[in-house]
Length: 391
Ligand code: GLA
Image (cartoon, rainbow, N blue to C red; front, side, top):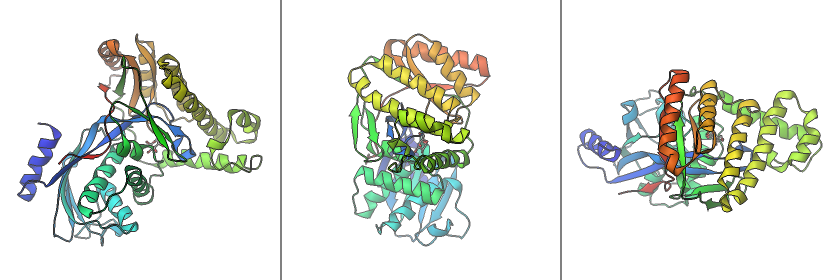
């Protein structure tokens, strides 16, 4: 049974009638520009054909009641209980409910109506795998409340509210990339976003190139600690560099030349983190022209360089991600491979000649399993549309 049929059936069983609406919001894969969104840099993600699906209807009840199929749990909360992260019966909200409750909180902060709903949701975006399962949940609920609330926000505004929910309610200091890609995705396109101006455009890959996602089966710990520490290191670098470059607001404003000149003044760890960011932003600047010229080979080399930098400078890789990337890079037809998303486990993204994509996926899975004893999931992905109401 597909996910839409499944959540519809569970909805009918739970609430006794058919859901009024169905919406979907996709996960994303990022091709280049990793850990630069919160440094005002450029990112190059695509929404993927895996998504969170939600079946929902308005209700006159005081509380919204949500069933999370993937957790086999339910939670109820209202505008009164959301600020204290509690449910109707005063018990604490389960962790998964912090995402929809955070969305409700962010909408309340905007003064927007958030009518009560009954909802059932499920996702085929793997959790903790670097494919933005949480952003997809946030964007699905934003669309659901927009549908019931009688207001309309442009997709980028919904993305910003999802980010606010995640920063201020869930407590992860993430940038805008994931929510942006989930809200604004375009079928068959890569999205190039300037994370400072929030201007964006689409770019295409040549027809004969596939995006292959390889899941290491290693899950990142559900702590946000390491992520927030990386972000703090970038902010510390900006403060230190401002002594010589008073005009800078973010690492985006530091050129590679300026950085090389001043790097010696930074503590070693902060230097490594900031070097990744400055050089990665430079790579994304080059990427646009390369993709417009259809130069996938050179673009793939930037992806490979990005992985080395994430591994050695930003230190967000792990042995399994490194194994998956090395094997991929040794296979025929692979232009580039690197970890995608925040890191510490999860997935790699690979650009592969279309005619070799199946063979590549099979060989990658076999060799990865032989090396690590872990069973990976590998799939050829298609760039999809952003969050949309299906019914
Ligand atoms: C997570 C965050 C994003 C971004 C990436 C790393 O996915 O949610 O904002 O910082 O990590 O590029």
